[in-house]
Image (cartoon, rainbow, N blue to C red; front, side):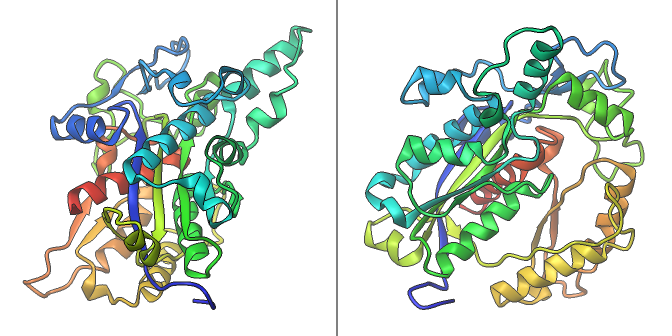
Length: 362
């Protein structure tokens, strides 16, 4: 912690957009009912792909969350999800972002950015049609964070992290660090993804990464750590948390969900898509997170698994996870996998999972 910083960062607001439901209450109630949002894809014809299922956000009206329709029209669906999740989180937190100004920042990431814009504008180019002047801004990975700032008046640290499925997790961790270091009192942090597109499906199917053999039974497709797993199921959506210094939250009488205690990041320097088989990179990140939180392995009672249902990831994730088991009969370690209902929202996934975790803890 630097001068002017704080040791304690807390969560005061939650916002989610997903196939299960938009808004934390709808999302939570859907999960409690055991509802799965995985169905045959309707946004495009998936017939030519081995995987034809996914979790799409339906009945979503982006105009409810934008101050101007023009801004909404000029931005990609991924930014729509990010702005919506942000507005919902701010409402939940009851925080005045504009009043915080330079003391409120935004870190919202995305693995793919404006994938839908990229594909549609590429088709326009190939067909000698007009390419939108908003093409480049709409497809950039940091545009969502910028538009969120414009929509809310947040003038503090602002960027979007692109690190595949870890994008939103990195945003949460870096946002926590920004508050700890005194760069902000409030941070809007999370991620969004809108990659339910033909090119995305084509690429992942070519990699043999997506679930196959369950097109007629979509609800059974997501099978993390199962012997019959065949890959992940694509999803879309967004998740945002409002983080604050404990002092700032207490001063305004905010409801506090929980503390964000530690953060660790690492790389295993192994392969472009496959994790190191022994899980050394993951172990490194876990150890760093515990050191950041001032905790020991024995303090861990809950692990939220990545669990992609792919052969390589699930195998690589198990060794470091099992390492957290303890012979202590008083320690009840739970390994949880929420993606059976929502599955893989790529860069936005971690925020959705943390929304669920906070609700369970609260």
